[in-house]
Length: 488
Image (cartoon, rainbow, N blue to C red; front, side, top):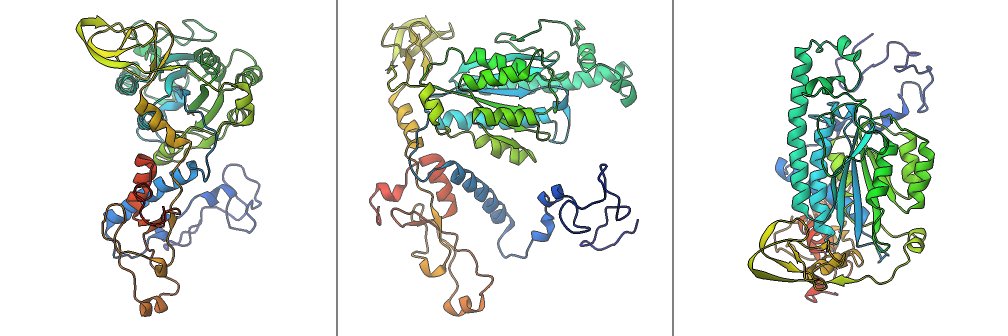
């Protein structure tokens, strides 16, 4: 093999006819030496670096805001569409042996848990009328971590507790495996998938113990074997169907699966389960941390969801945050959930004369909300009254959900310096970059600097990129249009 010390000529083949991975010698991309088709998705990022007078922190901030702007531009529509505001989402997390791989540092499980934590915060912030549940699959079973709930603090605490406990389990399993002489890869590979985790437990329960079938472990989750074994797609979907069985017809049924493994150990025919999930009107979206799997992609296509493969940790977060806005309601789902009106209650918040037990958690409280139908004390809203089943919300929750039906129009980037109207942002009044003179524009024909301005199509006011992202992700209202400035 010949090596060249230059950066632009790297020979990765031993001979013109040799292709790594068992390829046949032919070139899948057209010309000889141009590489495989999958190589076209990788870029030499160091070739894109150009000299710039802009500080490094400003360049990093620009890249971050550009990615956020691309995300909301993809999610936002140009016209109002029918969306489900009362959402019920179940997150399925793969905690099998494959989740211990370190291609996403420190492990796939940790990277997925961190991304889901951020997703949960954004999900409840943008969807105050929604509820979320968390299901884990491992050791050919599925267990319910958190039931359907609309309390962001409870989900954040459950995720934090899970991340801490999982880190301890991984460290303890590695230590016990070393003590048992299983550090050698040849010895460890001869062990069953759940043997390392079983050796790490005091009871020594292996992957074959416990109940089989659906595998619903209740509202508690045992981390004793959460880092070993194979996932079960069928058991996870059957458990999801049980969790979403009582969801009213006016609510959406969504599932987001974060999968690390390429295999699944199912007790029956998975095709029957896929058909049942599609028949129940459950929308399943899959984010794979490994590669594309046919059955998972077919599942997302059958249910109207999305399938994607995360390339790195940042891409994983972007893929999950893309599911924060409610998806459009299709004609099939609208016909299945034919319901125009839903009953809601607006509870009053008041202080009690003495401590009472809340009806939702049976915890003593001295102040809280009172159900307008049965007068039961409720500690947090929005939620469903556990006594009478009435949906309890506040008026700000409805107002915050309203922006999904009528989104702010996407601001258009000002491409020409001749169209610049002001040297400061119309929203925050921050100074914007000054444009080149007419003589400089004549010289800079091919390398004209960007204007860094974005214009509202309604009021024609120009703002900076930070305000553009803030308006679409936080305010959900154009401040210039609300004040009647410009053409708005």
